[in-house]
Image (cartoon, rainbow, N blue to C red; front, top):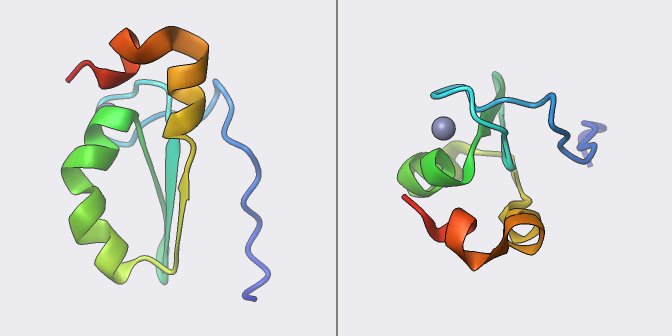
Length: 73
Ligand SMILES: [Zn+2]
């Protein structure tokens, strides 16, 4: 364990790319990035290679907004 806190993401957490609500937190050796479901899907595969931890809460997005909103690109 690194001691890094991975608190649940909230509405105040915003995607670093488009400022939408973030549902994925990617912890990197140099810091952390937040992504919405869309950008997590876009950058996730590449980032997960470098990430020390990926906190994926996109399941919560689907639960809150239904399959339509979460699946929209
Ligand atoms: Zn985004």
